[in-house]
Image 1 (cartoon, rainbow, N blue to C red):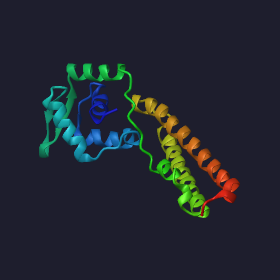
Image 2: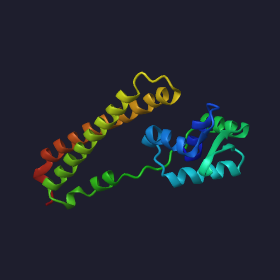
Image 3: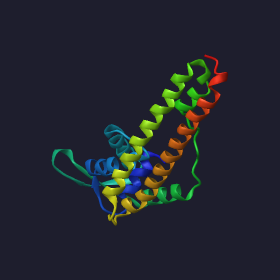
Image 4: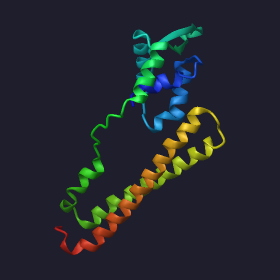
Length: 179
């Protein structure tokens, strides 16, 4: 996914929106999957307008611009949605550390995984709060967002189980630990 496609998707309901309104919806939903800063959003809106994928449909006070998706923008969004996703290499600081755990004392390695468990539990709680907040919402972002949210919850559960398993592995292999 790219920021441009996220913004096109938000405008796809044929309701013009300002950059501020788009950023607000983005932050409350899509940012969980694809974070972006305010400056990135506004820069991308300008690029999309320059490319004819969106248009400025209205000007308001203090330079406010309402954007609307164009026919070309709808086509670009549909083409992107229909194309197979291109998986990019995933970099994981945690997994890189795992390859070199023998370089630290086993107690420190356990602490690394215990801290990961705490972070994942906090993330699970945050995602559960989002689930409660959007339950009953019938808008497309909430409906589709629940599917993405479920992925996040399941991924967090898997990571928690993995970190707990890793602690068990460290406990079982402490006898052969290098340090």
